[in-house]
Image 1 (spheres, helix red, strand yellow):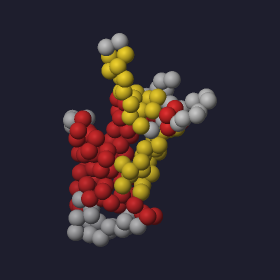
Image 2: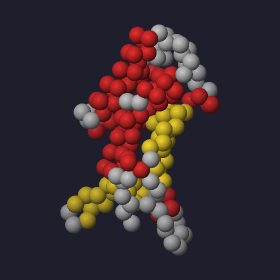
Image 3: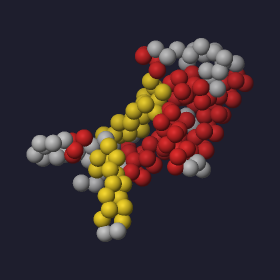
Length: 157
């Protein structure tokens, strides 16, 4: 998807356009045009929910054998990061997404985030002073958000 914008009737509209609408020679475009604020809001909501989920975070931490106090501190750090999302500036939110999320996939009723495992571990303080595996099999952690977040995004055109 690519970001787009247009001015119509004095109002500025920002949206993401799927490649199927952009492709040349497409007789019947079946792509999506989605409002920027709705997409970014759904992504931030999904990311914050994921950062508040001890089960998801424990799957990422994996076999780092953290002592209980350090584990609790890491989970609290992630929770604080999630809580700070709603109070951060637009620039800070975009930077957080760019740091933690490697790919966003949107399909009908589903929003899927691929999380950069090594960056998340660093943000949680787990990687500090410990070896973190960054091979291809462990680098990405996928988070799928079903319709509650994706349902907030409505197709335009």
